Length: 197
Image (cartoon, rainbow, N blue to C red; front, top):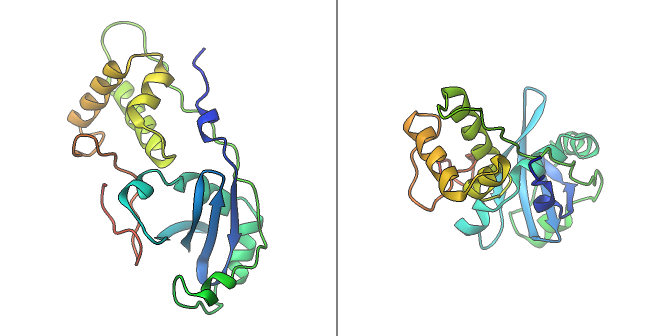
């Protein structure tokens, strides 16, 4: 049985709705930061991440997947919708920080573990590499190290997981990236610019 990776994501998050699609997020392992959401097909999607300073390391480890799930879980979503047309002060200003109501606080929902069951036999199929690519994306979205996550999920060594990731890239299932750099979900607007890194 593959050990659950959920324990690596156990820290609590607090998500509070504010004006004009903004939420404030904090947690035991996460300094206070702000994320702006827009409604798309009845689902709240992140568009901007704001924090000063906003470093590449912070962005790579940011648990956007968990925050997006928490915002769409219920109370936060309703409060965000009710405040969508409310005016918003300048980013980072004292008035901006005071504008968050605290309504709609919900704990982040538990995440399903990332699992991979390697097929029997020596020949690995396109379907297997598609599963590796999906696990890679999930790990990146959750702020985990994809190679380590895939190795633990499949009960393999990090070197073997690295070869699987390389092969998934070679087959066009993952975009090319610089060695040691992990791509995550792209965001646009005035915060994080879109791109693979």
